Length: 257
Image 1 (cartoon, rainbow, N blue to C red):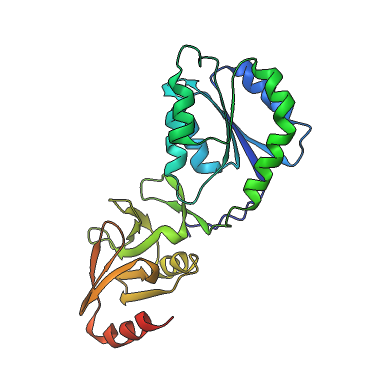
Image 2 (spheres, rainbow, N blue to C red; image 1 turned 180 degrees about the horizontal axis):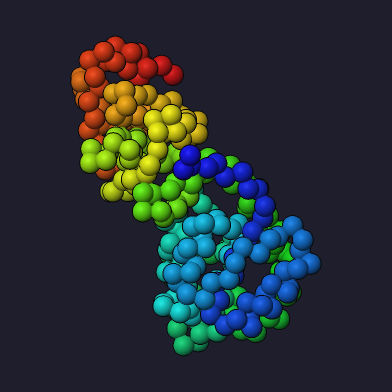
């Protein structure tokens, strides 16, 4: 099976910082707070994106100046993740040279805390209160049905099962299924049996239906339109045919609350 449910409930923090000594001291200062686990250290935009996607930490310490760009790129990536709202503590020593940083943090990225110089003095004074706020924010987040997908190229991606709009047979390779996600123009090709595909869809908790046995399964929450014998699901819209022998059952299924 190439999909795994995420049952991890540990509070995790990620350090996004290009100076190793700063990252090490952050880890040291976090040690007394034993309910928090270190999820990793990223010095670059690429590393930060990878760790955010795989670890989904509830707390992110993010610097502005990073290898390959600015921390704003990390914040933008975080905002793009479905149903994910970590507590973000942003810091920089460049605010005097870049006054636009504060404006962007307030208007565009809406971080939870912003700390400038003198960094360590302010952080140590505020850290216990900030972690209490971070724990509160984490406790109010919905428990999402997160699953792992393993694409045919071997790449692993963690997704919210509720974002799966449909799973369709790959026409070029019968062993593969195309997993369509809400808001994603291209599906993810995965090696799944139909039993595994069905189990994966059902992890969303939403009603699912096989419109065409061994060809397509859809999530009712993502149905946009139905006109016999076709149904349109997802965003972008995907048009699928409901086979003749399933139409009556499908119509009944669509009317059920």
